[in-house]
Image 1 (cartoon, helix red, strand yellow):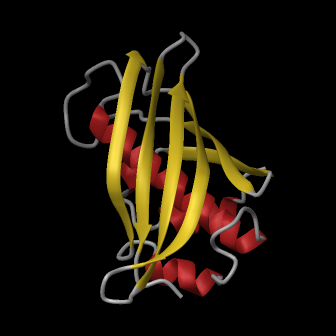
Image 2 (cartoon, rainbow, N blue to C red; image 1 turned 90 degrees about the vertical axis):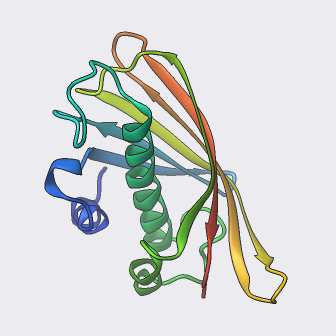
Image 3 (cartoon, helix red, strand yellow; image 1 turned 45 degrees about the vertical axis):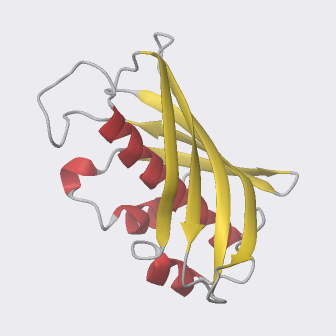
Length: 165
């Protein structure tokens, strides 16, 4: 179910050894978009092997999952909040204009970074206006990671999409 060509484009800005997202399936329920993903981190990009998923890797995986979910939502008209976007809009805004405003992660049990799954959902996407009159999108999201040995990490992220169409 992974759109391989889209996944390759979404991950293009990443260094080869930092492309952790292996597959992703996107679904929609009640106007909300969900991603179901598989990850593999053969070797950490910045530290000796810790034996478990760490906060830096959690964030990198979240970014890859989120970028894919937004791109697929735009491409296939899934979910709400990105109806006015084109794929050109996504590529233009992917790196400079999608900002993490708040990031929270809770490690319940250690997660094996060699093979784990992740899920993400857009809980809400709303159009807002800054004090200077500039519009932006505000998105509340949630994610969770699991492995075969009952490892678990979950969290919530607030995103701001600035300079939006």
